[in-house]
View 1 (tube, one colour):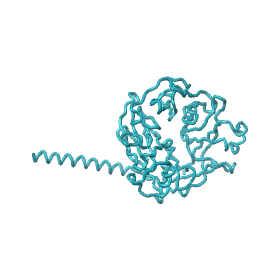
View 2 (cartoon, one colour):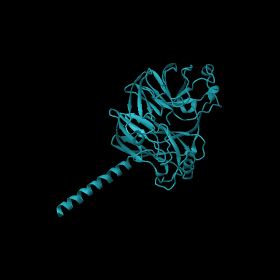
View 3 (cartoon, one colour):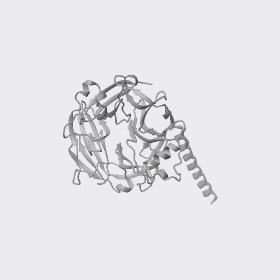
Length: 380
C-alpha cells in the first residue's frame, strides 16, 4: 500500500508540475502590444501610406448594398457580404458586378436569415450561416446553390459568428447563450459534430448577448482570437488555446471576470469599461507579416479607433480618422473590412463621395454602392 501511495503521489506531482510548466511556458510566449489610446491622431493617406487607391463598386438595380460587413478577395474577384441586405455580392477586381447570393426563405437552398457569411478559399465557395434554420448553406462563386448542412444542437453549442480553418468551424457565441458557458466552440466540418469549446464567458456578460465583428483572423493557417472584456490575443490549435499577445496601455486595470456587476445593455457595458479604464468593443482583427490591426473604443469617444502595431519595431499608430492632404475635408473611419495581400480595405460611405478624386466622384450618385479604399502602410 505504501508503494502504491508513493506512486500515486509521484504521479500527481508530475501532473501538477507538467501543468504548471505548461502555464509558465504559455506566459513566456506572451508579447506585449504597448500603445496609448489617448495618442490617437488623424492619419493622412499621402503621408502614412506607401500606396493607396480607390475601387468603386458597380451599381445596378440587382446590386444594391445596404451595409458591408466583410470583404474577401480571390485573384479575380471581390466578395462583399451585406448582412443588412442579407446578400453576398461578387464583383471583379475592377468593381464590375458579376454574381450574387440572395436566397431569403425557408425552402431548400434558402436561409431564414444571414447570421454570418464567409468565403472558403480552398474550396472556392461561399457559405452562409443561418441561425434560425440552424444550418450552413454553400454556394458557388457564381451564386449557384450547392448543398446545405444542419448544425446539431445549434442553440446550445454553436454561435452567431463563424470562421473556418483546416476543416474546423470556430463559432463565436452570443454571450450567455452557450450550454457550457464558453465563448468559442469548434465543430468538425465534415461531420458537423461538436468537438470542444474554449474560454469562459465573463460572468458580467452572461446576459449581455453581444458578439463583435471579425474578432477572429487566420494568419499562416493559424487562428487568432481577440475577445472583448479581455486584454489578450489568443492562438488556437484544435486542442488548445494559448495567449500570445497582451494589450498593454496606460490606466489599464485588471479585469475581474468574476465581478458582481451584470451587464445587460451596451450602455452599462460601456460605462463599466470606461470607469475601469479599459478599451472595449474590440473588433476587426487583421494580422499579416508586418502588422497586427484591430479596432476599439476608449472612454467617451463616440466611434471606433483603428490601431496598427508593427511586429518588427513594436511601435504603433492609432488613427481616429483617415484623411487626405489633397482633400482636407475628407474624414474616413478606420474600420477595416478586409485585407488583400498587404493592402487593408475599407468602405467609404456615400456621404464622403464628394471628397473623392474627381475621376471617381464624377461617376457616383447618392444611390451608388460604396467605394473601396485599398491602402498599404509605410513601415514605421
